[in-house]
Length: 497
Image (cartoon, rainbow, N blue to C red; front, side):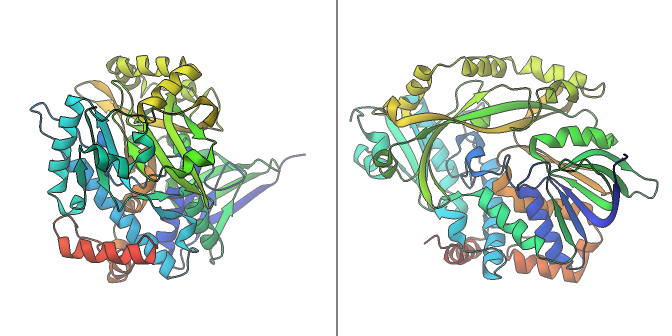
C-alpha cells in the first residue's frame, strides 16, 4: 500500500529544533506576526543535540574566561578583537532574553540562566605572563572593565577554594575574575521558546520528521521532501525560505540542497566527554567556571574547564571536555556521516585541511586512547585533591568543525560558527560550533538582515528590532554609559544581581 503524501505551504521552514531555529522563529514571528512557519525535527524532542544542557558547556560564552578568543600575536601582544565581538554578541542575547521574559513569552529566567563568576586560571611563568597581558588588553575596554587579575594565593583561595585545595603557596599561579559571568541552560531556553512558538497561529512543529530532499524550483521557492519516522508517510513542504539549523546535521542537508554557495564545504567531527562529580560535598565547594589553556593541537572546544552548572534546579560540577573522534555528525547520527559527506567539490579542501591539521589528528588519537587514570591526572591539574570515586565519565555532545576552501592552503579548518546563505536569500545554513548558542541572537539578526533585505529596511521591522534589542544597530564597547544601563536592566530582568 503506497504511503500517504501530505502537502503544505509556508513562508519559512526551519530544519532542526535547536537554539538557532528557536531564536530565528521567535524573531521572525515578532517582526511579522502573520508569517507562516513550519519546523521539522528528526528526534522526538527539541534541543536534544548541541543545545542540550549536558551536550554543551552552558558557559554563556562571553569571552570573559575563554583564552582561545584572545590569541597571542607573533610580537607577543594580545589581539582582543574576537573577544570584544563575542562579548558584544552576548550582550545582545541578554537583551533579547530579557525582552522575552518581560513579555511573558518564556517563563521565569530561573529556568535557564544563573549568575556564576567566570575565571581564567593558569600556572607557570609563561602562562602567567600571557594572562597578565590578556587582562591588560581586555580590561582597558569598557565591556571588560569589571575584570580583575590576581597572583595572590589568598585571593585565589577566596575565588576558587576547591581549585586551590592542596596547592603550594610558592606555586606560580594567576587568575582573572569576572563576577558578572553566567551559566545558561540552552536546552531549557530552547524548549521554552518552542513552547511559546507552538501556541501562535501559523506555527507548526513536527517531531520525528526527517528531511530527505531539498530542491529549489524555478520560481526560487523550495520543495522539501520529509519522512514521518513514526508513520512512514511522506510530506512535501513548499516554502519561500529555508533555514538549516541542524547542528552536525546541517552539512549533509546543505549538500542535498546542492547550491553553488555550499560547494567546497566539509566537516570534521569531534566528540566530547565530561567527568561529572557525584559527591555533593565536593560540588558545594565550587561556584565558578574556571577555564584553562588548551593543549597544543587541541581544538578550541576542548579548552579544559572546571565548571559549575545549574541544570533543572540542581547544581552540578563538570570537568572536561575530553575530545574524541567519531565519524558521526550527530550524537544520534550514523557512522557513515563523515564518509558520505565527502563529495567531488569538497575533497581537496578536506584533504588539505587534514594535511594542515596533523597536530589536531595526533591530539584526538591521544584523547581517544586515554585511560581513566589519564583523565584523573588531567583533572588533578585543576583539582589537586580530586578522588576517582567522586567522578564518573559522561558522554557529551558531538560537534562538526567547518572545513572550507582556501585559495592559499587549499582547505582550512575553522573553529567557529559560519552562516552561509544563497545569493537570492532563500536558503541559509548555520555550520560550526562554539560560541554558537551564546551568540545565537546576534547570528540570527545578521541572518535576517542578509535574507530579508527589503523587509528589514522598513520602519516597522526597525522599530521592533530596537524594542527587542535596545542596542540594535549600535556597538556597546565604545558607549560605556549605554553598556552600564543595559547591563543593569538585563541583570534585573534576568535576576542576575
